[in-house]
Length: 315
Image 1 (cartoon, rainbow, N blue to C red):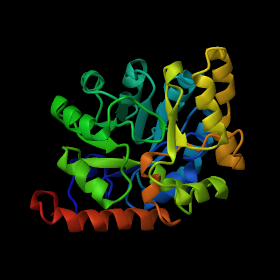
Image 2: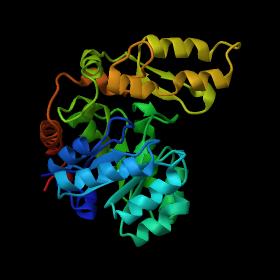
Image 3: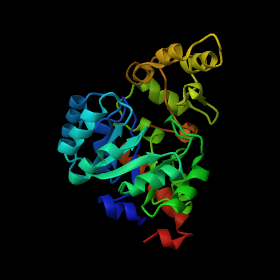
Image 4: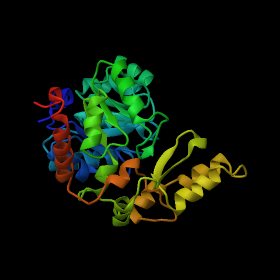
C-alpha cells in the first residue's frame, strides 16, 4: 500500500485527485472517484452558485467519502460560489486562475481544507503563507489552461519551496507517471485527462473516442497571445484558432469570442468544428474506457510494482 501524507490529511485511501474540468467534472464523476478511494472534485467553472450547490448536494447523496470543489477565481460568480461552498462545508476546496486570499478566512472557518493549483514555486509559497493545506503543482503538459513550466521542472522546485504536501499534475496518466511524481517530491498526483474516459464521465462519446484514438503529437496549445494558453486535441476548431491567433488582422476581442462556449460544445455535443476538446499530452497513453475504480486500481498497482524498488514509499 502506498503511504502518503495527503491521505492522512484528507482521509482518503489513495493519493489521487481527479482534476476539475469545467462542463465535465460533475457530481457523478467526483463521487465515483471518491468512492474508489481518490478525491473527486466538482468543477465550478463559470457556473452560478445555485448550479454548483446542486452538484454538491447530489454528490453528498452519492458518496460518504471526502470530495472537493474547484473554485475558478476568474468566474463572474466567484463571490457567490465562494460563500456557498463555505456554507455547504465542502471538505476540500481547490482553486485556480487567481489568488484565493479574499476567501481563505471564510473557508477555514467552515472547516474546509484549501488546496490551490499553482504554476510556480513563488505562488506556492504565497498560498502556503495564506494557510493552504497543500498545493497542486501543475505543469504545461496538462489539458485545459496551462502554464509555462513543465511538470518535471516544476514539481521538485515547488516541493523544495514549501513544507506542505505537493500534488503533481500535468502529463500524468498511469503508474509510471505516478511513481515519477513521488520521486520528484510530490505526495500524490492529480489526473484530469485519464478520467475523461471514465465510464462515469458524462462527456459526449465522440470526445471519449477522440481521446482513445489520440497519439502523442495530437495536442496543440492555443491562446498564448491572449495570456491564458489552453491545451486541447488538434481539431478543425483548434487549428482554426491557432491560425487566427497569428493573424495580425484578427483582434483579441475576435479571438476571445471565437473561444466562448467551445469546451461546452465539445463536452456536450462532440462538435468538431466549434468545440474545444481539452486534453493533456498523456492522451496517447490511454487505451480503453474504464470505470473510475478501474482507473485508480490500475494506476496504483503499476506504481506499487515500480516503487517496490524504493521501500520508503511502500508500507
